[in-house]
Length: 164
Ligand SMILES: Nc1ncnc2c1ncn2[C@@H]1O[C@H](COP(=O)(O)OP(=O)(O)OP(=O)(O)O)[C@@H](O)[C@H]1O
Ligand SMILES: [Mg+2]
Image 1 (cartoon, rainbow, N blue to C red):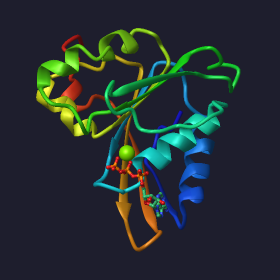
Image 2: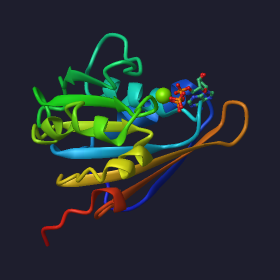
Image 3: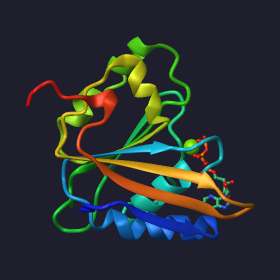
Image 4: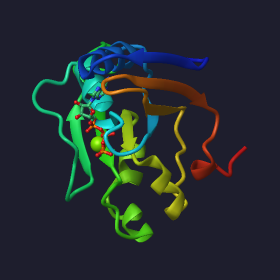
């Protein structure tokens, strides 16, 4: 778990992946990670790193038609067996679709969910009633430099849980 904001500058895709992989190993069950950053900022690269850190082998590509991919976490032991979901809302067509892609069911499974183009959640007023919520912002700072900022959120505006 990260309780304070963290910042890192990665000088290559491999560095972004390695940073994400290390951070993934600190996560707790029932976590949502909201990824922000423009086209090519490195969101999918970061998610690939998360998957590696969680011991998931094989290719990690952005979900396109289904918008959501599910993997099984292999490590660390406290997360083993829980699902890791990779969601990419870039191709979201309607806010109503947010409620049919299985996100609400995914939220009930207590694993880790990483969401690209997380700002699109706001369109649908999706609630994110999870124990841990993070915002990850990636910004290009040169050809292969990416600034990565991780901030823990109490509640996201898109996610305000109405229970106190
Ligand atoms: N330090 C870096 N970290 C991540 N990606 C980098 C870095 N330097 C260069 N790149 C390049 O930037 C691109 C990042 O692509 P990636 O698919 O991860 O971005 P994205 O934010 O998911 O884009 P999209 O909005 O299309 O989903 C890749 O081509 C990658 O090689
Ligand atoms: Mg992407």
